[in-house]
Image (tube, rainbow, N blue to C red; front, side, top):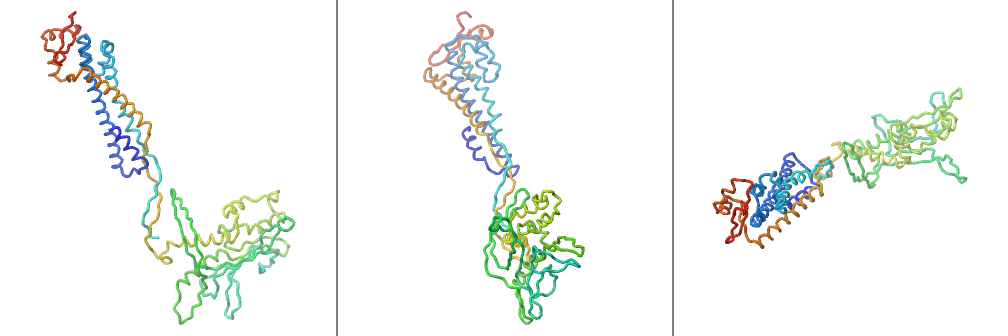
Length: 446
């Protein structure tokens, strides 16, 4: 049973607890293993004790009080307080003390099983540069300018530099951008350089991994670029390609967040001021390093509220930390990725399908204390083995001794004088082996 208990708990280690009934069942099993181990070990010790007890009776002269203690050691622990028994039956007293100590392991071994919070991963099914005036002020420097190129009725290019209203447009699925970016010149100094960039709409294949950790969601993934998607040019007599319209609608909304200007103006009274006329200020792209030129103009003009012109404001530090100091081309793709993922739950834009996903959830798992389980059982089994070996030695030396049944005791007390001696607890009895049986006799001084 002790071996079974030592195997059962390691098997449970790391297993999810499950329902309360499962927890109760496993606790019952652990308690049962400990209880049955105690019974088995105690029975073996008392059996060996009885074998040695009759050998002790057949060799030593003991008072009736000492015999009462020796024969009642398995029913009362106070028998071990008898000085005569402790003095004359040392090995038996040690065996009896150990037998009584075997009630202690069941108090410790079941308690070595404990429950700790953990997480579980399960697989479940789930529905898968142009200058423009501002009133009477005149633009002096354009740091950032982005627009969507469109065409008017005569085929001329029209820049759409503000969010579009819901009306027919003959536009393109492109975003044209120009902005100042810091570069290192030949002298090793930081200089401003005009940079031009065109973003186009492409179809892509996404490989996404969704993770939840204590109510926090983390989305990671990658994508592969496929074919280019053009702005729809439907004829009145043709069936519209709704997929192409959906792609263009997505790009329309995306570019509405990016078009506009970051500029500095000078008024009639020669006062200068900066203007952010773009929805980009509502996105993480505001912290891009490609807009550092605009925010540094305050310092260059001596308008920074900090005396140290190289110190960045706390707000700008937060924006740059969110954007991780990346450039616009990287952040634009990230914005497109995030916007695409956020639309995956929309039934109008995706095809629902059942797929296998991995989900982490908080669970309780079993654990156990190996030392608290193995050491008590190891000691109990070791000392039980010693007592059993002593019993076996007594068996080979003196043969089979009787048990402590009433019949055995009566048979040992065949001499009528024993009855009279037994009435006085202070008188002594001794035993002798007659025809393989232990026969009690009154001691010579009785």
